[in-house]
Amino acid sequence: MPTPKPSSAAKPGLDRSGSKQVGKASFYADKFTGRKMADGTRMDPRDDNAASKTLPLGTTARVTNLETGRSAVVTIQDRGPYVKGRIVDLSPATAREIGISREDGLAQVEVTPLSIPQD
Image (cartoon, rainbow, N blue to C red; front, side, top):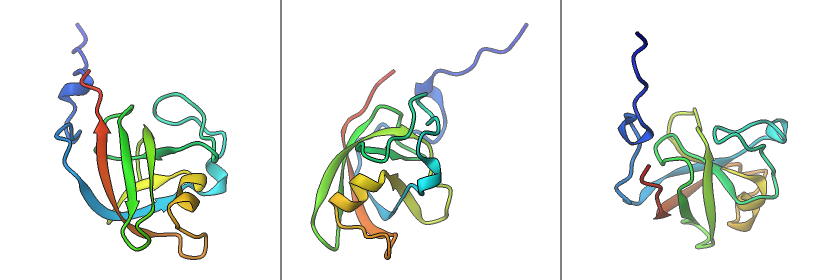
């Protein structure tokens, strides 16, 4: 008999606390455009989507660039980034909106969860 998979609420590493996170943000490279994300939708570089290793899929969060003070609201639709020290990957449109240039590629950000799915 197969072992049942744990529900998303029981998955280790998911943070439903609503606590702010501070760390580095990067953004999706062009090669990811159109690829399926963890939630099954395709990556659209014009949407306000993001990837997080710890926030549940479907979470809405405010991402604030701590250097510029600019912020945007995103939906967590994917997993990543898989680079040490980075806490969120942003769509190119969102990165531009909060002041992350292609030249810089990274920024120190604060991620504030606004709505976290509980299922």
